[in-house]
Length: 253
Image 1 (cartoon, helix red, strand yellow):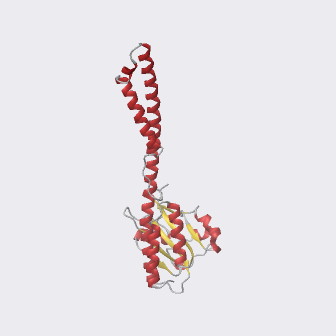
Image 2 (cartoon, rainbow, N blue to C red):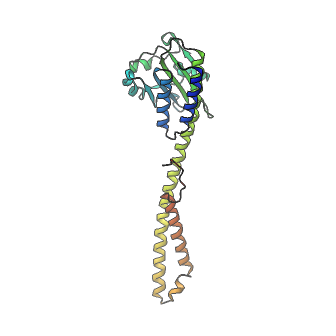
Image 3 (cartoon, rainbow, N blue to C red):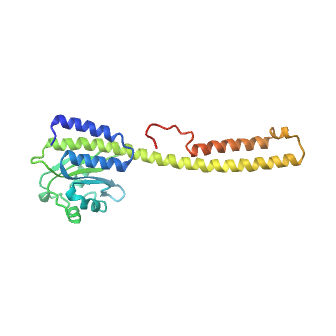
């Protein structure tokens, strides 16, 4: 395990890197892989809470080379949110260290059975957010002869950073979806206005010329002005929908 000075540096590194992610999957892959490496563990997983079904699910997990086969199986498993050590941590909002999982009455053996893994020891901490705990992070079989309260405190600090970064990335994803929907609506509305304005202006023009009125008077007619306004408005909405007038920030897609 890292020394106190190294841990502080690692926490800074993790915090700095986590704030750069806007994609949820990339965030979770980095968080689980880096945490597993920090504890030199066989596995690390985020167990996120499905609030409606009151179940944990494993969106992303990082496994050592010897446990790669279990990684795909974890993605298919769901665990009752009130079961196991993860359920205890979520309910009590308290990180815990389990040195001997097999003899801990809270241990949920079904995950090991379905993945052919053997959990000997683990560290587990809640992912705390402003809206409540969103799940837990588990470090499975860390390679340390004597796990301590310092190890647990270290994981708890990492979990806090992950939870904040997850909420930020989740909000970004939601806002991006809303912006895409709004731009699509503007695109459709712009096309409709352009088509209506064009058809209306053509009709007004033909009617004006059919009556042999002066051509210059055509551009002062209220109907022509209205059609011109529709054309301009439609073009503006179309441009917004295509992203022509959206300010781009460095790194934006």
